[in-house]
Length: 148
Image (cartoon, rainbow, N blue to C red; front, side, top):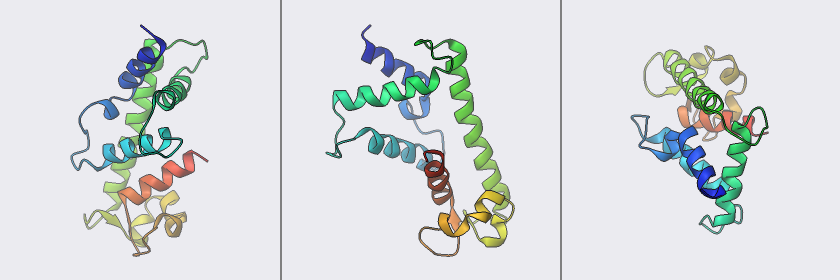
């Protein structure tokens, strides 16, 4: 199996949400990740991903998963990566739902107080300046903070 196929297989196994159907009933979460990854991979911004861009994207993800930096992915490394992504997503979703007292899919400033990081950064997260933050805004803010 050539290197690209190995990287594609490893990424598909480690990031099944990108390779399989949506796991979020709204469809939004996986669509955001797919769009985010596409944008990240399309380094020359021509609206498509060529072989070199795909290889670079998969190399990056492979290197992130290869925690012992031995150039190989063990079953444990792949499980840890999958668990880490799922656990982080689950914690964030549960926290948002718990804070959303009126179940309208958004958090106002008062509701956001249950999530200190969201409350502290409320104005930066509220990109549409409507006085509330929704899951997309929180997700995008957290993702951008992680990449800095």
